[in-house]
Structure formats: C-alpha cells, structure tokens
Amino acid sequence: MADDRKLYLGPKLRVLRRELGLNQTRMAEELGVSPSYLNHLERNQRPLTAQMLLRLANVYDIDIRDFVASTQEGAASALGEILSDALVRDIGIARDEVLEVAENYPGVSEAIARFYRALSDLRRLPEQVAAGPGGAAPLHAPIDWLRETISRAGNHFAELDAAAEGLAGELGDDPSAMQAGIRARLKERHGMAVQIVREDVLAGTLRHYDMHRRRLLLSERLASSGRLFAIAYQLCAQELADAIGSQVAKAGPPDEDSRRLAGIALTNYAAAALIMPYDRFARAAEQSRHDLPLLRARFGVSMEQLAHRLTSLGRTGARGVPFFMAKLDRAGLLSKRFDGEAWPFARLGGTCPRWDAHEAQEPDAVRPQLIETMDGRRFISLTIGLPREGGARGRSVIALGCEAKHAGRIVHADGIEVEKGAATEVGPTCHLCERRGCPDRALPPVTRALDLHGYERTVAPFPFRRV
Image 1: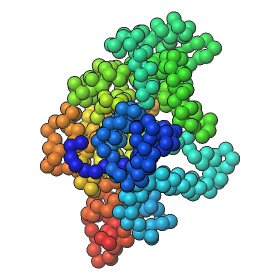
Image 2: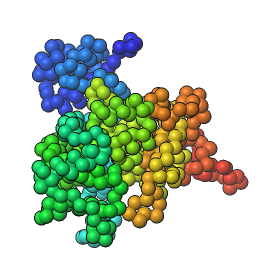
Image 3: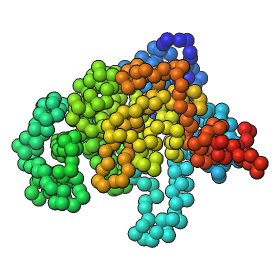
Image 4: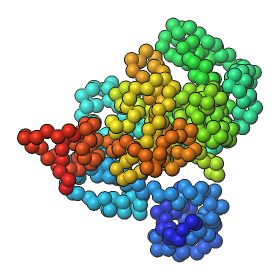
C-alpha cells in the first residue's frame, strides 16, 4: 500500500463471501486464517492487512483496486436521494448517518432501495388501473431490473468477452474482412443467408430473421456499422448461445419478459465483444488515447456502439478508463445509462441542465467539457451527437465521461486544465441540488425551505433558505 491507512472493509468482505456462497469456516480455511479472525475482519474489529488483500486477490481472482475502492459516495448518494422523499424528509437524517449506513451496512442500503422501488411502483398503480386491463404495466419493470443487473456486474461479463474474443480470432481484423467472414460462417455452418432489402419490404423494421427460409433481412437504411453489428448479433446468438444462457440464468430474471430482455442485452454485449475483441480494442484505445473518430473508423462501428464498448473494459489486470455513459433525447430524458466508476448525477432522477449533453450536437462531433460537482470532484465529459433515427425530429446525444484524473489518457481533453481551469458547476439534479444562485434551476431543492419575497426577484429561480 502507498500509505499507512488502516483499511476496514468488513462489509465488502462479507458481501464477497456471500457472493461466493461460502460460510465463514470455509473462507477462513481457504485463506489460511482462523474463523474468529475472519469474523473480526467482517465486523471491522481488525483492519485488512496488505498480506490479506494479496491472499484475497490470489485465491478469489479479484482486482485489489476494485475491492479497496470506496463505494461510499455512490451508495450514499443513492440512499440520500431515497431519504429526500417527501414521506421521510421531515426526519432530517444527517449526512453522516447516511454515509455510515451506506459504508457499513450495504445490505440495509440495498433493502431500503428495493422497498423504495416497490413504493414508487405502488404510487403508479392508480395510473395503471385507470389505463385499463390492457394498459397496466408490470410493477417491477423489466428494464429497471436489467439496469440493476448490469450495474451490479459493472457492465463487464468476463465469460462472454472471452468467448467472443476466441470467435473473433477466427475472423478478419478489418471490418470489411470481418463482415465477409461472419457472412461466410453463417452460410457454411448454419445455413443462413444475409440479404439487404428495400425499406418498404421490412415496413419500419431494421433487422428481421426469417426462421422458415433461414434468411437475415437487413434494411437498406442500416449503415455499414449497423449491418456489421446485425450479423455479429446473429452469429453470437447461434454460437455463443450456451454462454449467454448461462449468464442470463446466473442473473436470475424474475419473469419471462426480464429473461428475454436480458438475453437480447447480453447477445448485444457479445456482438460488440466480437467486433471489438477485448485485448485488441483496449490496446487500440490506450494507444490512440481514446480518439473516438479514429476508433470508430478502425473497428467499423457507430459512435453509440463504440461508447457502449468503452464502458465495459473491466477485465482484471487489463482495465480501461472507467467511463460512464448516458444517452439522452432532445427532452433531456435518459434512455440508456451505465454508471461506470463514478456517476456525477442523481441515480434515481434526472441530470443537471448545465451539462452540455443537453445541447444538440452535430452528428459524430465530440465536444469536451470540464464539470465540477458540489463536493469538488471534477469530471471530463465528452458529448457526441447521433444521426437522426427512424424519422425522429430531434437528435439524441451520447455522453461519455470519467473522473478528471484520467484526462491524460484522453486526446479530446488536451488543452483542458483539469486541476485549476474553469469548470462548469453542476448538481446531481435540480430537486436535490443545493447550489445557490443557479439561473438554470428548474425546481427548488426538496431539502430546503423556499425563501420568497414579493419585493424582490432573484436571478436564480426558487430562492431557498440556507438552513
């Protein structure tokens, strides 16, 4: 270790043991310590030594950096959002208490989060009933379950990456060579033909697999990157079905819709890993300093596909920059989100209007921004405009970001003074933000009382009291 800090990581050790399905006696035996000593470690009565960390890494193949890295801020932020709900806001739970629960009792935090999601679903129940028998949605939406599952995995599925990388080794590196190789493999091994058809034939569908004739029909509207991804998806669905099915089963989907959604999402993941094999892609990203247009051209992918892949580089011993990613529409609504190592905005709400991702961007143009949160953390954000899709009136944008300490590894951040340069001050989301004097505020903070006077009007909407 670089310093003499004592590491009390009992809750993390306990969570790891439970994830591995071990009791204390078994884990103590595998680590070569006594059960009582392990019990002391889990209860934070003894610190984790460097020697014990190395044993954990060697025995259970974990990344020490991931294990030691504090999850306090992210968990505390989510818990704080829940406890700002009008139902319990008047209790005035101190931030120190929230931090203590989030750090030392992760199971309690997760239980509270689940209860809150159930409460949110019940609050929507009258609207669902009013919508009639055909309009009611399931209380636990499959998309919410999928997001939680991917978040817990850190958007990295090592088994799928390894399987897809092995398959990619039998195909060409160049995008055109890979596309030809996948087409040939689909034809020769699976009897499938790939056919480009007119837009009116598919009637608004971009990809359709005709099971009877064993034809994969692709719309003429699909760009070359979309065509490559579509055939890679089909090949992974055929040849990596067992690996994908195993991952879906491991996730434990609660219903059939969730199972199907997980199958599609993980097949998409495998397709991206096939087109952008881990080692080759990670090496190219580092060598180019994450030059997004260059990487897009080299691997024949779209900016959205590229951004997705960059968030998934979590292989032990070969981790990439821990990017977060969001896809926003013209109204600022999030349709996709991967939190990465640090997400600067609310996890249960929206984002900050001062973030450049809310502004329309030209397709494929990369716009960097240095942002600073209320606690002084700085982030590099890269906003990329996307082409209009399927007749949409407005453009969506992709935003990639990471903590500013990684700026030296990103060519688009050159020229930005990450330590002392001017940064755009942002908040978690308006109803949780206590930053005063913000002219872009859309809602008052739920944590403060309004301070309104008829004799004056402030620049910032919704003035509020400091305490």
